[in-house]
Image (cartoon, rainbow over all chains, first blue to last red; front, side, top):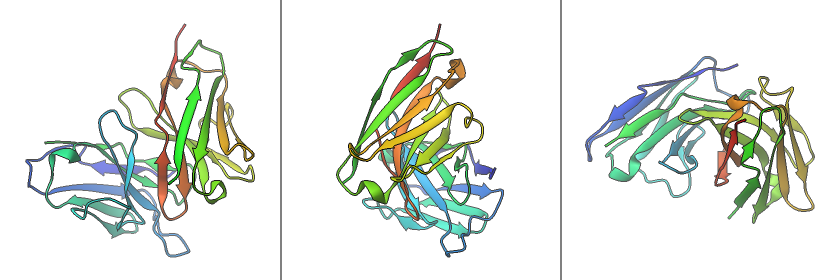
Length: 111
Length: 117
């Protein structure tokens, strides 16, 4: 199985400050079709997770542009340029290049 | 806009069978792979398995011997069955749609299943 490792596991950021979360996979997530099967999700308290980023760096519909994703191969980063109060929750990276699909442990963001 | 609505029994005794169903509204049922994901209390997300509109399935190895996912294309529904449940299966279960290259979206509202004697 591919192991997804996130750091840090918790993060406390003042409003208006940047935040960064790292995700490392135990194998390359680059598919033969050129896509990289790395996604980022945010789970706000009491809600299902919501898709933020797909294919490493593409913001999903409605996701503010303060969220950005980068990386390649096995190393990936989610950045929030200017954290807002509504960004609190747990952030997960996920891979879908190989079954079983796996999520990282989650990074809890507090304000 | 695709939306999911899920339902099923919320309280089970050990050794019973968990059964959940998810209805898909809007969008193209055939476009997605339909998955179940669970989240144990205070824990992370665990992908259980998926099914496509043709009935093709993939399951996580740790649950493969106890899990089955089925689809009813006439009703745009898919279902999860997990046999011989234990307390370790207590979790919130989500039904989710997956599209290659786009990831998991949409998500159902989640259903808390508690296994207790």
